[in-house]
Length: 287
Image (cartoon, rainbow, N blue to C red; front, top):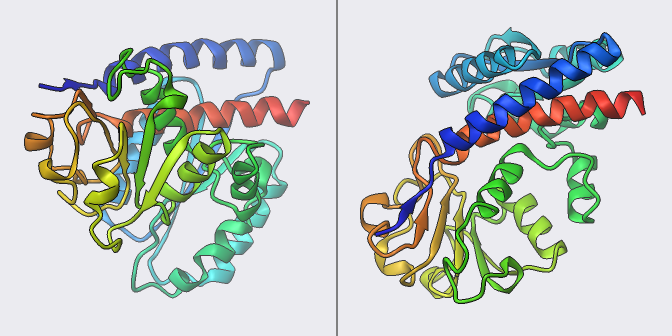
């Protein structure tokens, strides 16, 4: 039976440290870190995630400003708001809650809108400039979810997934390697010298790749895509699916050595990583 990773516990420990770091930063500089989150529409999941981020930000002493817009907002209006935030020196982080509403006018302009964010304030690391730096192995910030995954990788017990205790000698498989999470994750893993197989939900006979993995990371958003028969015994499984997991947790956990649940696995650490990036943006602005 697998070790079930407790993301809430680790996130709580990291939040305590972040609270101390933010307090120290305020005392030294007189500056309060500020994160602005742009929310378009009223999708229940997006509204919930924004509330979670706001609550956690406020708990560690980071100002959190929520800017809400209707689903039919014009791209030019959002771009104008972002440009104003770019110029506001009191704002250190800017993020857009994704995905944008499917039927909205702005959906086709998503990449243009995101790229309007000043890369130095792009604490979610979604602009093309910052993603290219990740690909080169020189990130200004790591995407919050990628950071969360690496935090989990660092918690994997010695020998889990393979006989080798060295992470660099483990074989990785990223499912969903073309998505917003999977692509930068795969780029960064490869740049760091890890052995990585890349695939997605459209890959023929995907189990050929998933069965080779010592560490399997799935980020497709397709519920229960990863089945028990698709993984090898002792595998480490990191499930990035949301709001429902990519992994058939009940059955895969019977053969895995280590597995993350949904919810309570990657999610809490993603929020903390976003806030850590916000504080880092403050340091960067003073450098």
